[in-house]
Image: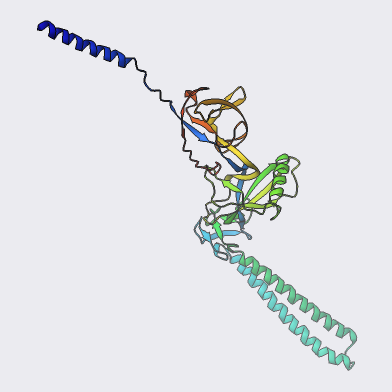
Length: 386
């Protein structure tokens, strides 16, 4: 009986061992690795170029002391918006008031002399008709009358000039705009160099001007393209120029060409271009540096791929493409311009191809993969939205 039990147990253990060995010989199912891919597509792509420009107000008006004297008062808050005609500064006026009073007195004297000459002429004219006085007396009376009239006109002109000088002691805003910091303090003698002559600057900033320079070759190339594209509205009239600020952000309002200089500077070989931008929020201030983002070309049915998809070796560019069988292929490509963080592909790719985006180091030619479409977000207007 015991032998039978031992035989049964031995057979059971042998069956378990055989089953374990059989299971261990089965090969596990192969799972290809997941690889993120970017799917190519065709679209019309504008090509931009950047040029460094400087911002100026539509009007930057210098506030000058037009008469000499001590600065008596400052009547505004620096950095604020001032209105046209608002009083800004007062300069001591006593000497100009005295001058005006003196000219006013001279005018009164001249008018008195004119009245006397007019009365004398009125007395002599009837006597001359009656031959009671000589012709020379009549001529002298007429000359005195004309001279008296001229003296009145001269006195009036001197008085007007003195009143204008007196008005310059009250400096008012010529335009509405943002005013800067005063270059003098109350008590300073102003209006004569080396003392401050320019007291301040007011800028009209609801519209700004951005100046930049183009080299001769760039000018010819870019404006030939703009001329072809703007035949309907005229060159530069369409508002399609962007402004990229120093922090990398894009100004929300687009501009258009406002001015092209008369000629090319022979010393630099460049021409001045001016672009006008609306500035309703007043964020742009004179003196800012910014990049003028100018469209110079339009590529039809272009294919773009992220720059990280591209490998370079000895000046040759290539990508890894996943074919319809989910096999990886090594593909050489010819590239054009960069558009933001993308490359413009001239040759080597067609629409709806899957280009390896993430994990280039993990794949090789002929390898089977499981492609997963990558989500690519663009944060800059320089980049193309996908």
